[in-house]
Image (cartoon, rainbow, N blue to C red; front, side, top):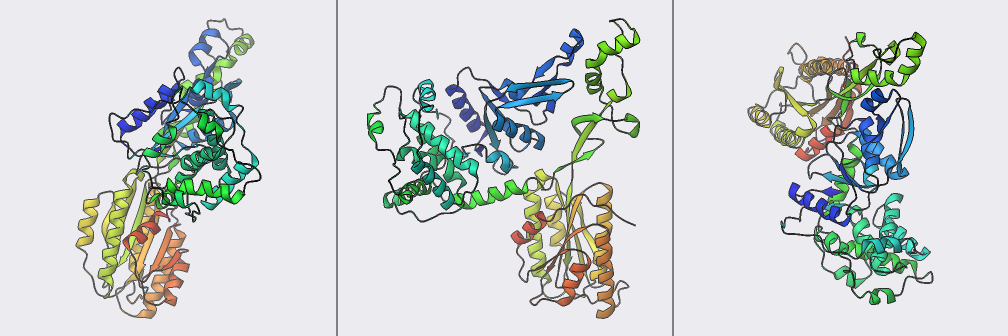
Length: 569
């Protein structure tokens, strides 16, 4: 995983990797690649010429023995799934278009992550050994260091042993660092063996365990246990960009490695806690400031990425992601090439059945027809319903303004929009229709007046109108209601708490019937019974937040996006 850095830094890193693997293929996987190009399928032109099905190797099979490169922010979920399966099995299986074949596909995988872009899914991140931060790689003259003879190291790797004490140390060290994924521990074991092979050893020693901890465990650490090794604890922390450079810098060919060979390997008699302390202290020394916070945040983003805003939804128009059997008379688009692919394997049999000559046109049947499977990005809209009444309104509006700015600044790539409804006095007003424009949102919030009564029912009725409009264009929508819950103005604009509360409950039930995803944020200093009743009536989430913050509101909004709503009535 290469995270951050400039495009030039990423290309220099890939050039260095390419230089270490001369002659090995390096294939870039296009973000919009189709399944048949990725895993293989029918070679249409060759099949037409030969009159029989001819298979075509996909990108994964053609990368056997080399490397594939993916753009984490743009790669589709189906592509990640095929890559993960190939990494596990070392092969790809093609069973489509009348073809059943297996191809070897053992390759290295490199995913490029932008600093603020969508991360690779957790299922893929757990399958790669190294997470490298390139933000420090700004030196244009930097070149990868020379390493020992890789061919000799690969040959030696088969004989490198990792005893039980070393394995227990890595398992215990990973546990203390808050790492629970088994694949990561197995990757650390593999790296320890590879490090030993690069340094001319056939037995894993403490230096190899330390290298595995620095390279594999440290970037994934979610906890910072105490380090009993004072030397390691007091060691200066290295920059994240420098760690891979120093650890990958094995001794040049011909260097004296006798000192390494003479080092005593860990034994089963040695204390498991002592070896685990070596692992923990090495990982701790490699942690730059703030890495634990960044790791936790990135782990959360990986888990959220499968259900976040901007996900793709099936449509009859948009980007094509495949085909299926179907009838184009239903309004779907016919895929002519896929239809011909489905028909070609059966042409010889159909010609014999009909008595047609070999030069006859392609004979199609109804079950050959293939229609396009398309997806489009689902726009997501968050509607803030802001209580602009009362003395606390200015504070609520200020925090809501900050939350809206955060969402629009960070959510542009996820196609997030924000709308604002403000209610005060006797009316509710849509002061900001759904928009991506940050400047427009700032102007709308800045001009909001405050003070007066609380016409909650009128505000919820207006929110229902926005929900139904979102249903028509397939948007994913959530509603954030920010109020102290003290409704005192009815739908007709007249005062009276009894009628106002009755109207508000009725409006809340209508909002629930429309399928809206809602969060009711109660800003009152004490919990109000009526506020909880309104939240329950709209099937929403009740949150008591007497002192809301901009970051807290933005986080709540991003966590409540629902699938596209369906209006009723």
